[in-house]
Image (cartoon, rainbow, N blue to C red):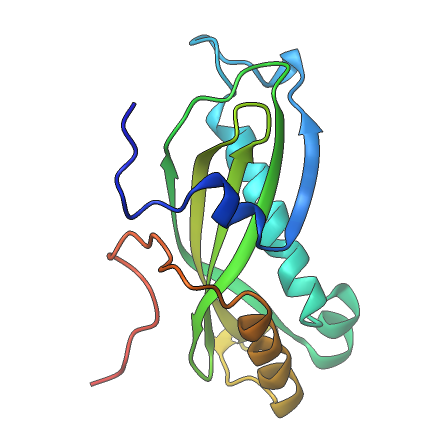
Length: 171
């Protein structure tokens, strides 16, 4: 499989914070095609993004005390290389952008055994009031935490976004 030039290399990705792993892929993850089933890519990548949100303070305590949290508005998963039983995988993450109510994030699942980027999960998450179920702006402290995370994962290569989602400006 040829990987397009805009896809980051293994070394570029592993320079990002590791949020999940390493995980040794068990036989229970294998599907009928002889590689890791899609649900496990998604679970591992979603777990990594949840770790980032936790670090930004969007925790169970935040939801309980402020009555706010994140809802995933969109997600897009891409596969670049197969992962097999016995491979060791890790997931790294970065924030791509934010508005006053939305975060655009990516998780990068790498196969540490083959040293290849295997998959990306791209997510837009909206900040919501859990009572009204409506999108609300970040409080100042949350906006600052998001900005710290953006700075923490700022790298010199463009995120391989799908182009169909992201932060949208209102007309």
